[in-house]
Amino acid sequence: MFKKLFGKKEEVSKVVELSSPLTGKVIALEEVPDPVFSQKMMGDGLAIEPTEGKVVSPVDGEIMQLFPTKHAVGIKAENGAEILIHIGLETVNMKGEGFEAHIAQGDQVKKGDTLVTFDLALVGEKASSTVTPIIITNGDDMESVNKSGSGAVTAAQDVVLTVTAK
Image 1 (cartoon, one colour):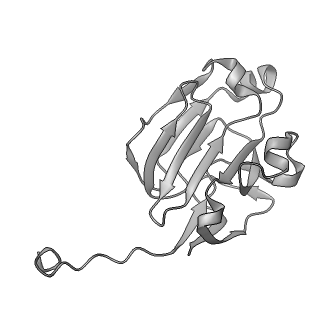
Image 2 (spheres, rainbow, N blue to C red; image 1 turned 45 degrees about the vertical axis):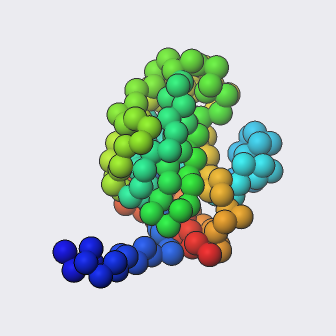
């Protein structure tokens, strides 16, 4: 109540830690077999080779975009970082087959909330790769994007990126 009376805004941390949105193995973005991601045309980040078909929110934030084919989700973190999770490569051609969204555009999510589940075997069969890039698409607006994950990671537990706003 006092915050409302005196107009004090709650301080938003400039630093956000992204936990892994998938369980699997971290891969350097440069190793992703797609030049759009490996050459960082969409932004910096990393990728995960998933071992299970479940994507969870890496941060507390808002769902900015859910692609109609459910193969990609855009999240805005509390510090303004815009995160793209692109499930597999060339998965847009699957037209949503094997993907189930558990969120909608505009939803508020907490770290660990289930975003999308997918049939990992089907993606492996129909897409060019199951490798899932996690990209900070507005990196120019951020002070830094630090990769901290490597090797095997568990969804919602292991921190893979630390993003600091300017």
